[in-house]
Image 1 (cartoon, rainbow, N blue to C red):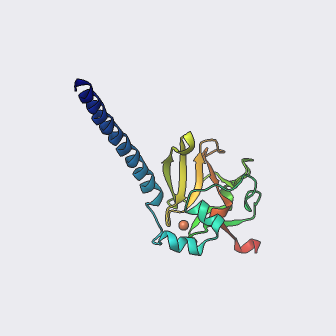
Image 2: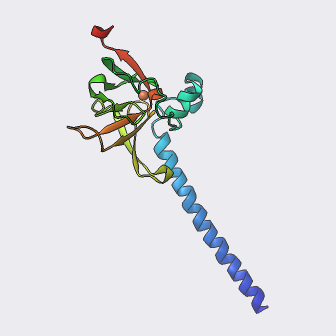
Length: 170
Ligand code: FE
């Protein structure tokens, strides 16, 4: 009888522990979702999915990453501006684009106010995610190993961008 009670108590403690643990997991999941889905660009995920190609949707809306050296703007240095592929807002100018050798388009800065930054601790790394401030589309990450004077490297997926050449270079 005493033994059975002991088992019962252990069982109750186990249930309590497990519910605390699962509460913690669901909390952190919710935070992750909040961060990623905060800015939906006034569109439902179904609408984005319909509008974008599978590859672009995975990168822009699901925070995917294109393969290094595979993007169309990695080695692209024409004069003009880079727009968000999701909403068309101007995010970067060609004056800030440089060849970082990292395999993705790199910019030493974004246009002021056009890019949001979020802490990203996914994949066991501490990084800063960058998104389009207007529609929330995932662009890439920003690192502190860029050229002077900013010292920044905006490492952006080509798939998140759309280039628009300047009038002179057309
Ligand atoms: Fe956008």
